[in-house]
Image 1: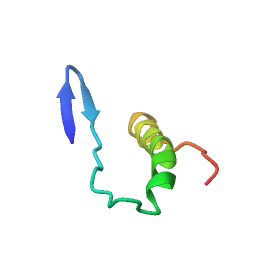
Image 2: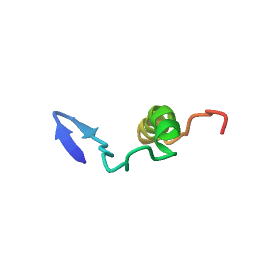
Image 3: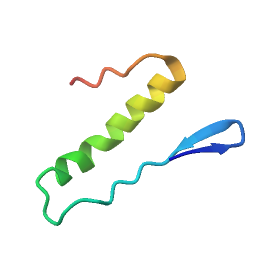
Image 4: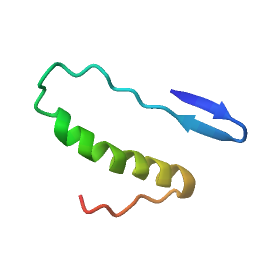
Length: 53
């Protein structure tokens, strides 16, 4: 969800549709902050982060 907050745009990501004991949940939980940080950096600068993937 995108939401205007003052002169900024707030991105809220909710992913609560995981089936119980889904095998990808743990890896996604660990990688999601890096992916979102990369999206933020790209939106602000037009450059992506070098996160080694």
